[in-house]
Length: 172
Image 1 (cartoon, rainbow, N blue to C red):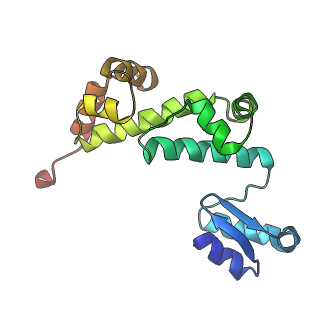
Image 2 (spheres, rainbow, N blue to C red):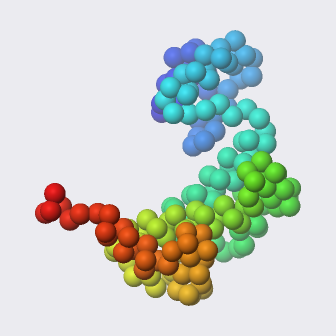
């Protein structure tokens, strides 16, 4: 909504506004490009008009959505999922992502999963077994090993650190 309002304020007519993507008539944007960039940055967005950057953002959005909103439920491999969603060869997507981001798509995927695990540990509503099941890990041991590789801490040590840093509401 904020992006659409900003575009209309600048006299632009958005053809299509979706999460992470806006289509505008090409001839309209050239006149107010600098102002559009400034206005979007003011509301926390940026203009991505480079095709490579757009593809990378789409990959990141798909992975983030998969991990944080769809609980990592896939009927196919991650590579097939991205290939189907983006209609491009996975090796092309993988090479582009690695070149620009400096890490592989798989590493980015793991980092997103570990962030979700951290979030669930801090919420303290699920056991580690339930977290492993929810995020499609084959076992708690595999989740713990991956967590330690990324964070340097075991999930239980991370949980203890979190509870040390936080004070119960009745102690504030």
